[in-house]
Image (cartoon, rainbow, N blue to C red):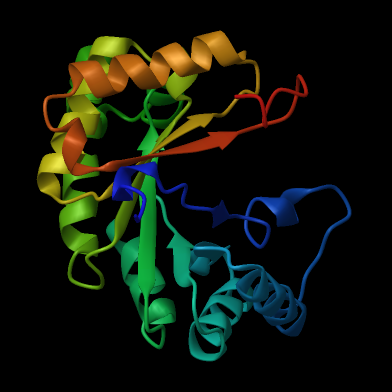
Amino acid sequence: MSADKSDKVIVFDTTLRDGEQAAGTRLGSREKVEIASQLARLGVDVIEAGFPISSPEDFQAVELIAKEIQGPTICGLTRAVIKDIDRAGEALAPAKKSRIHTGLGVSDIHIAGKFKDDKYGKTLEAKKAKAIVMGVKAVEHALQYTKDIEFYCEDSGRADKEFLYQIVEAVIAAGATTINIPDTTGYAIPEQFAKLIADLIANVPNSNKAIFSMHCHDDLGMSVAN
C-alpha cells in the first residue's frame, strides 16, 4: 500500500543559495553544477540553485544547473519584485521542472525597516496592507514562468500572527503552492515552532491548498529539532 501523498517529506536543499553565505565560501558556476549533480544523485526533491538577479555569475550558475541537472526541481530565489521574478524566470527557462521562490519580510520590524519610503504607506498598517498587495502581485507574475511557486514569509517567528494568517491566505489564493515559514533569527525552539505551524494550518482557511515548508537556522543548535 502506498503512503498518503500528505505523508511525503519533500527535501528542499539550499546549499547553493543560503549555504553559500557561510563565511569564506565562494562557489563558481562549475562548482555549483558539480554540487547540484551530487544533490540530484542523493535524491533531493528541490535544489535552490541561487538568486539570479544578485549577480551575472549567479544568473549563469542557475541557468547552467537548469540546463544540465535532471531529476530535481530547480528553484531560483527572488524578492517580491517584478524584475527579480523576470530574471529568475529567464534563468530557469531550460529546466524541465522549475520553481520560483519569492516573498518578503512579514514581521513589523522587517516591514518598518524595509518599507520606510512613504510610497509603501505612511503608517505601519498601511505598509502591511501594501506588503500583501506586493506578495499577491509577485505570485501572480511568477505564474507566467512556472506553476510551482513558493512564497517565503521572512521573519515569521516575530510576525503578528493575524497579519501572517492574512498574507498566507492571500498568496495561496493568488496561486502559491508552497508556503515557506523561516525561523529567520534562529531563536525558535521546537515547541514554539510546532505551534506556529499548527496555528497557521488551523487559522488560514485555504491552508489545505498549499504545502508548508520549514527553513530553520541553527543559531541555538535547534534547526533539525525544529
